[in-house]
Amino acid sequence: MNSLAPRDATMYWLSARTRNDLFLLYCFADTGVPTAELRETLSRRIIRIPDLLVHVLDTPANIAYPIWAPCEFIDEQCLVHDLPEATWANLTTALGDLLNTGVQAQHRPWRLHLFRDISNAPGFDPGEPALVAVLQLSHALTDGRRAAEIARTLFTDTAADTPPPSLPSWHAGMTGWSAAARALPRIPIDLARTVIRGVAAARAQRELSDLTAAGMIPPPPPTVAPNAFNGGGAEPSSHAVRMLVRDAAEFQVPGFTVTTVAATAISLAMQRYLVDCGHPTGELRAQIPMAVAADEMTRNSYRDLSIDLCTGEPDPHHRAARIAAELITRRTRAEHPLQDAQSAATAALPAPLLHRDVTGYPINQLPEQVSGHTVISSVHRGPADLTLGGGPVRFTAGFPALGSVMHLTHGVHGLGDTVTISVHADPEFIDVDSYAGLLDATLSDMALSDAKKEPARPS
Image (cartoon, rainbow, N blue to C red; front, side):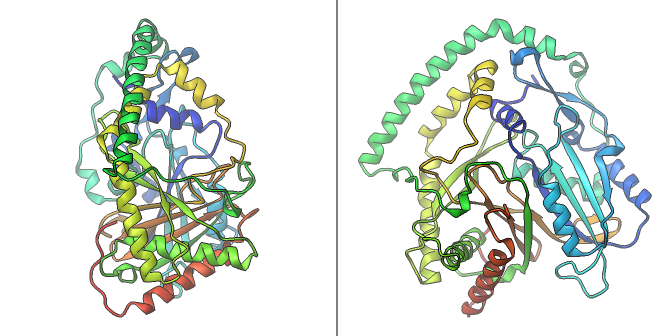
């Protein structure tokens, strides 16, 4: 069956209420190849990537989960943008505008944005032009890890050697009405499964509590009061981004992963920003997505970990050690098999009930307690062997979505010998240049303070 998994359907339904698309930026050397030739190359690659040849088909009254239906690539999905002046500064402004848009997955769940002949790109020589490609994907289609795999196929020359996929014949006959007709008789069965799995989830929760009380697994993370980074409870009306492209060697701190080093720098910058703005610091927490195993039908396979950024520890190295220990603690609890019971209960929920919950949940209000003040999404996107228009890739970046209670997020993305920390902020609440300047200085200070270097563990 090609129905959206409940987790993916949740992302799809949420996209009607908030901006939650994924944006993956890849910066290549611009060789000057004609744009028409560039489009032709991309078209040949796209038609060989199954994930880029589907769209969402809704079902009547959401009786059944939406389904993935085949569709053809159309030229409008590949957009070439003209800037007033092709500079890196103007590109980041245009990117902020793009982040305030969303694809319509029922039409096409992705777009590719191209910016040609960009000057002053990070790491480029004076006068050397850059070609910037931004892949925009519906979160229903993919999570961050799978999105990187799609992009790798799209920007790899060998993709042209792969024959176009052949879709199963039953795809053509599947419609929203037929999916609803199949789902309607199953609703009582699904309700019964939901009750049974709900009972199992409650039992698992009691067992988790018992194991926690016995000290056999870590306790759940605490919630904390919101601060300036959480905004005022409304969706951002504008977006601003900055990218700090660094040598990967700067993150090679003995005993720590790239994620830990980045989180430590971010914690110091956030704390200093609050102090500079006259706000109380208090405890700072970050949501860090953790990849988890899932069945083949689920495209979003991750859990958010609430991590203490350990602002009470002034020494950066000791703070990094505490953050590393905190990551291990949160992973240990999140990976416990009993945690799967709640996911299983949600997976059995009939589509109309989950749709009601997703569309009715109050997202536009600031709660008294939150699980995090920022998001840190860390993904290593592989070796720097990608090309576009004959130009090699130089670096990659990504921008976790903002929301009504999250007005500052960070992407940490490695590619080859570079690591880029991206800042995505709501300029109504965050002075993005001031904050990015603090983060840049913090990264430099941390790099200078590490005399010994050895390869960091993977993110």
